[in-house]
Length: 201
Image 1 (tube, one colour):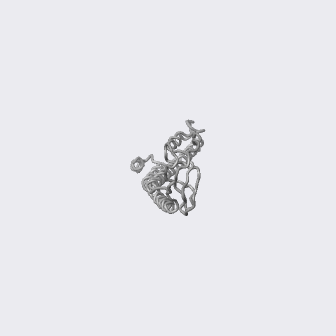
Image 2: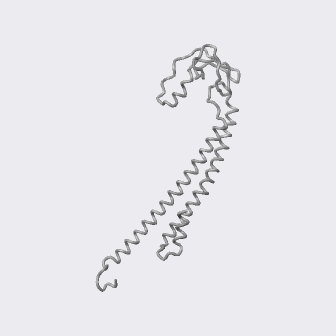
Image 3: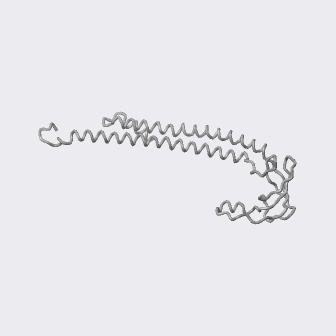
């Protein structure tokens, strides 16, 4: 709004310099880019991210399988985690030696994290494996993928708006520097004769 008011105010002002008008037009263009182009780029990037993440969700659902595992024995506690946030998330899990059957039919035994507070021999829990029975992470769900896509789009829009505003400020800074350079040149020409009798002033 300041740009529009500036354009209107300086339109017929006799003190208006060309740089003032250029500055006002630049501010208006930057405002339009921030309000129109940045959100549009954010929506496009968010849509592309959504497509890629949903494809990853579909692939992970095909490649990762929930398998029932049986506790053989509880192993030593996991090493202390220096990060309190991840440590609190792991408090509900126990490290156990477990048996499970892979989707291809092979028997497997390994040390895994079980979602059991106090596991006992014979307790059953679910692990995620690939088709060969190797432990993998839980597949990404559609809601998490959508959240990541929204964050990617929003972040892109914010970065675009920041780039536009940063570019505008850089151009204005250069314009002001040129204005001062021209003022210095004009003053250096007029300065030595300023106030002298008969200097035509």
